[in-house]
Image (cartoon, rainbow, N blue to C red):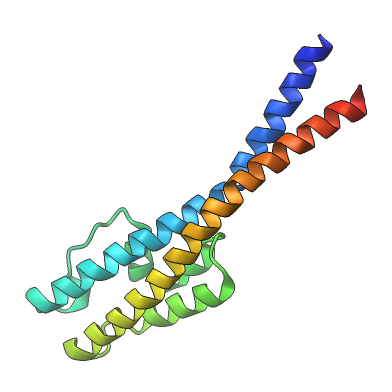
Length: 147
């Protein structure tokens, strides 16, 4: 019975650490999706030449929801405050310039997002194993204290 409880404690703490590390996965996925969104947006501006508000983009993505309502950027927990502010400024001013200026702004945002994606991927590969190891160590230490 004691060993079953000990194994259960270690498994629960390891699983909790895995849950806490998911913010790094979501962050990397967000910037990957944002890059795709910006690429599609720029392609639509070049080829279709419709106003931005009439573009048909993937409606189920987070970048599209931010595109529709820039204030929703502040509801995303896994982004840093300065990133939220930059994205809010970008999305709230989107569609106010001519197509040449918009393409330039989108290109700049693509470069910014690619840098953030690199950082997010690096953080993900470094911190997820660390979180799992810490959860495992915490579980083992709790078991040692209780026994």
